[in-house]
Amino acid sequence: MSTAVAVAPQRDGLHNLGVYLRFTARRNWVRFLVWFLIIVGMLWFIVYYYQQLFKDPKELQVFVDTARSPSLGSMVGLLSNPASIGGAVWSKYWMFGSLMLSIGVLFLMTRNLRADEDQGRAELVRSYPLGIHSRLASSVILMSALSVVIGVLSGLIVAASGVTDAADAATGSWILGLSMGAMGLLGVGVGALVNETSPSSAAANGTGVAVIGVFYVIRMIGDLQADWLVYVSPLGWGEKMDPWGANRWWLLLPIVGLYAVLCLAAWALQTRRDLGDSLARARTGADHASGLTRQVWGLGLRLQRGSIIGWAVGLIVFGGLLGSVMKAMQELLAGATNMPGLAGVGAGLDATLGGLLIPLMALAVGVFAAQSSTTLRTDEAHGVLESQVAGGIGRVSWALQRLAVTAVTAVVFLVVVGLIMGSSYASLVSDSSKVGVGVGAMLVYLPSCLLLASIFVLGFGWWPRFAVTVTWIVVGSLWVFMIIGMALNIPQWVLDLMPFNAIPKIPAVEMDWRPVLVISAITVACTVVGLIGFRRRNIPT
Image 1 (cartoon, one colour):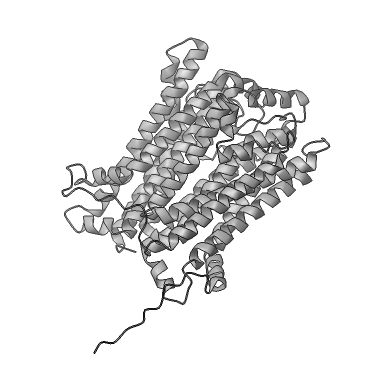
Image 2 (tube, rainbow, N blue to C red; image 1 turned 135 degrees about the vertical axis):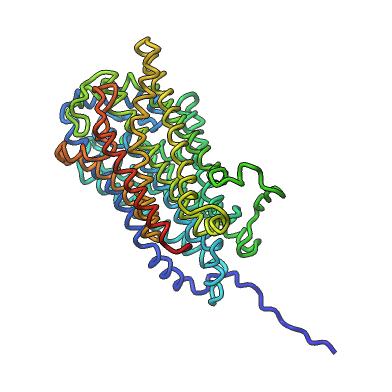
């Protein structure tokens, strides 16, 4: 005699969606607030700052001429009517803000979806009576709401600021805001799909950023060579909404349509995979570890390989594009020599290179150094640290070898970007010796870049649970504070305390080793104190 056992079918609905929505909102409200303040706050400061900077129509015309150059337009997009404060704000911020928002919501989607599966939290919450789609739906709803709110308030800020006297001023302002919100929805859709197809949270983030990067490159090639190619990229659709120009509001519809298709595809795929599994299988490793990965620094380099390659490509591309518009930006900087943070650098190509382009690229390398150093905490959370220090390697030696990967890679990045900038500079002045000037000017920023990594090491040693968060708060605050300083005329001596402002802006000014030595001493002190704490605390913590 046999007994039949009935197996309950897997839930395929939205059971207890409201409960999980509240849980997700409570878990992420601080991150929502931070992203809102960064995106909308930076837009407000740029609007205010440009209203103060471009009171003279001649200075605005110089900016317009620069923004219309093919090289700069390929980076930030082309606007048919940039001859207003609103057009200047769009050229300065739209592309950067849209990319930042789309990638930000992509990372938030991964944190609440694939990362929870990797850490076992998804399995825990699914033990509650929860519909199979409730987790996905809650993330899509909340991240979409964040994007829409940011877009609407961005449009409201620009409209209320009176950035243009044109008859369609309000329409253009709202189109600018809604196009930014639409790019956030694009990030939500891409995030929903890659979290279903990727085998890990890191793979989901990498794939998602790669997809958005492809959209950006297609749009960039279109702006440089063939206008029709811009319409192949969703980023191009947002660009071609063209506020204060064509005002193509209807291009919002295909963006929303693509967002809906991506979310529906993720919905369909979710019913066809097991929890914790993915459609794309994780690649299996070799049977035996190579000689490189048997070393602490070699394993660290291998774990960061994808990130390092991505950073290298990005820095080379953007360094080349900035170098190509150096001459065009010379006139723009010459008309803004009274800007806080650039006092004393003068005008000309030296000021353009040393006062504007090199500090910007050095800050990007500093962000890499911060991101690379935080992998120490990631490896502790994933058990890599515990398994290695259980052998013959000491804690301090482990940390120093991993940090050496960060430092050496940062040096390589600074040299490569310096070669690119120096070559552009040398071609403009017909002096090949200027290539070395570019490399030297970049390497001077090495202590400032490593200072961001040392701040993490300090927290990693004594307050490991908060180290990553504090590090990114410092990086974000540094960026935002520099913008506030430029907009609110904070005293020069205060701005000079910023690590990337304190460094001499070679070749615009003479070399001064004092700030370099001071920042180097602070970097070493933070690192030593952090390693002392790391040596004394429990692992993992």
